[in-house]
Length: 221
Image 1 (cartoon, rainbow, N blue to C red):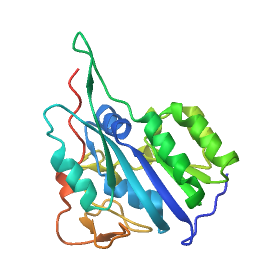
Image 2: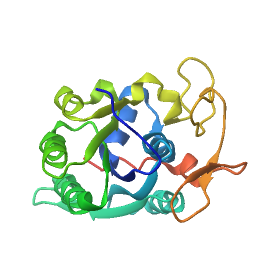
Image 3: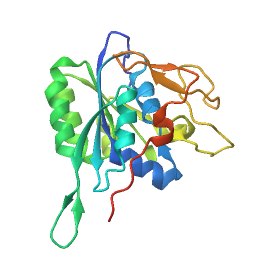
Image 4: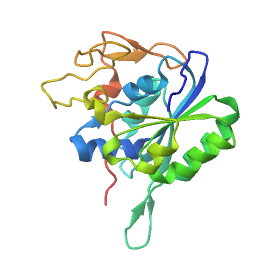
C-alpha cells in the first residue's frame, strides 16, 4: 500500500520497549538503538511526542537507561514489576500504551507503533477507521505478528537492515553503531544526539549515552 509521508504530518511514536528489547536479544543478541528507531520512523516529519513504555525492576538498575532515553527526546512511562504470592513477577504496558495512543489520536495525523505484538491489531484498526489516523508499525519482522503487519498502513521491517537499529551488531562484518538517514550508507558510523526540544536527532561527534545504555535488563524470572 502506498502511503504519504510529508513534513507537515504530526506524528506520535509509541514504543513497546520490552518487545523490541527481547526481539533484538533473541534474534541478534544485541541491544536496540532506540534513537535510531525513532529517527527512521519519523522520516523527517513533525514529532509531537515519542513515548517509551518501560519496566523498572526491583534493583532499579535501569535508571541510567531511562535518563538516556530522556536525553534524546524520548519520554519514559515507568511501571514497576508486580510480585505475586509464590514469587511470580509480571509487568505489562499494553493497555496503557493503547490508551495513550487513543487519547492522543485527535492531535496526530500519524500514529507509529514500535512493536511486533499482534495484540495491538484492534488498536491499529480503531485508530485507522475510527480516528482517521495513518498507522505505521516499526519492528523486527521475524518476530512480528503477520496480522499486525497486514493491519498497518505501513510496516518498517528492522530485520531488513539490523545494523541500522542495533548497538554493536557485527552481522555482515564489523560495525560501529550510529544513526543514519536518507541515502546515507548505513555501514558508516555516526554518533548522534538531539539538540532541541522537538527531539530532532542530529548527527554529532560525541557519543550518545543511549548508545552504551540502551536496552534495560531483562526482568528476573
